[in-house]
Structures are given as C-alpha cells and as structure tokens.
Length: 370
Image (cartoon, rainbow, N blue to C red; front, side, top):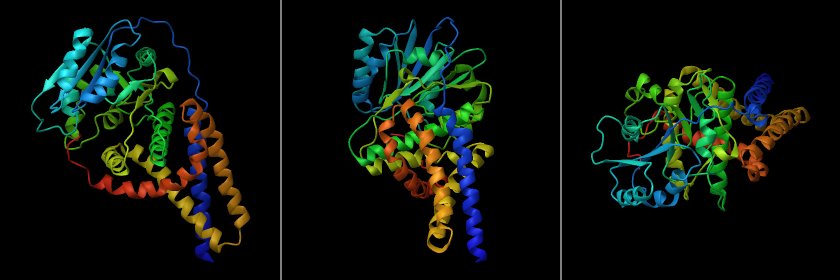
C-alpha cells in the first residue's frame, strides 16, 4: 500500500510538471502573434550553405535561394571536399547569378569535425553583418524567406530562429520525422519566447557575424560532428538578443530521410550535443523528458493495481485535453495540421524514442558529417 501511494504521488507530480510545460512554455507558440516590424532599410545579408557531395540538391534548390525577393544579398556555398559534380554545378550557376560566391575546400580539417571548418570559412568570406544559414537540401517556402528573417533583426536583436519543416511524403516514417521536428521546434521556439533560448536549427537561422568571431565557440567542442548550430546558439543566445520568426513565408522546407537507419543515425548525431548544453537548459529539458516517462510508467502501474482508476483516468485525460488545445493552433501555425490526429500515438512513442537516443548523449559520434 505504501509503495502504491508513492507511485500515486509520483503520478500527480509528473502530471503537474507536464501541464506546467504545456501551459507556461508550449502555449506561447500556440498563441504567437507576429508583430508587424517597423519600417527600416533592408541592408545586405549573406546566406551560407555548406555542401559536401550535394550535386543533386544544389541543382534542385539553389536557384530558389538565389532568386529571393530581396534588394541585395550574397549566397556563399562552401564545397567541402566533394567527390561528385558539386563544383561543376556551382560553376554553372555562377554564370547566371553574380551574387553567388563559392569556396572549394580540398583538405579535411584536422581540428574541427563536422561542417564547423566549412562554416568558419563561409563566415570569414561573408561581406555582410547578418548571416543566414541553411543547407543544400533545403528550399525556401517563398521568395520572401530572406525578407521575413531579416525583418526580425530590430533594435538590439542579434539572433533569429526560424522553422525548417520536413516535406510531406506517404508513410509512417515521414510522420515520425515530421512530428519529432515539430516537437523539437515547439521546445526551442517556445523557450526562446520565454526568454530562455537554448538552441537553433542550422537549416533556418540567422545571427550577426560578429557574434561568431567574438565567442569562438567551435574550439570548445571540436571533436563533435554536430554543434555548429545548437551549441553555438546555446552559448551566445540571451534573453534579450534572440527573436523567432514563424510566418509561413519564412519556413525552409527540407528533404527527410527515407529509411529508419538513416534517420536514427541523423538524430543520434544531433542529440549527442545535448550533454554540452548549459546546465539550466539540461535541467529544463531533462525534467520535461523524465516527467513524461514517469507519467506513463506510473499511469500503467496505477491502472493495473490502484482502486482509483476514475481519478487516474481523469488526470490522464486532462493532460491530453491540454495537449490538444495547444497542439491544434500550434500545428496549424507551423503547417503540420495533418499530424494532429497522430499526436496521442506519437506522445506514447516519445519515451521509447528518448530511451533509444539516450546512449548518444554519452557516446558522441566522430564519423564524417556526410
């Protein structure tokens, strides 16, 4: 009986923590209102793309970036030791677009893993104060992508975090990838709105170039494949210098993985950086994850052994109702509304996902980023 009472209190506490995160953090995305930016000059910006064997993706996506509806900008592509026809594709585009700049790396960096070295070269080559990052497999949702991101650099803002959804394809894997992307965005966007920014996604984010050279973040974790985006933002973002931009025109659409193995490898590589976040961010993210696992575990035990099933089911249902009230507008806002009917199943699978990914926190991957 004593053990059952302990489990009951664990369930109460876990449910309360879960509700707190949804109401205090995640609701901010649900009720987000995009304030019209004050009119100011659209100064030139630099777009940076690191490419390694991206011949096909550059052919498909680069033109949409070069054709942006923006007064003056440059697109810098760093060809990172590609062995395909990436360089020839860049030459072909350069004949038509004078704002395309590219650098050809022919030697791997011995000190910086992943695309950190290529990104550093791109930042050194950039001529403009504001740099906007994306990947070769990404296509902007509109011709106003650059304009929408740039508009958020107002007053003392130095970082803008955008949303990069994955394209929709048939199949359960695609739904899992897109839900996990939405779930991650719900975290980093809402935390940033709550003045606690902790990460960004390199497929769609921007910052002042001077921040990179002032902080020298990459040298702290040179051995990690990832970290060029989330760890960098984790280090430099503050409650005052960060904004989000989630208007549909500002989205950057990405091509998802097509096999479970490829997706798991990608996520393990990304998650391996989490242990290097600031302690307060590790605590906040860990508390949400741990409380979710305890919530489901204690719920199952109480349904089987407790005589308070009605009360337990009521609390369980209340959490799901709150989730639905927040997910409904959030998914509509982020153009993921077709996933709404799937959220109860996906939420059930999240503890399993976290369990599978936990070893990646303790054993970083050191293979090539491509």
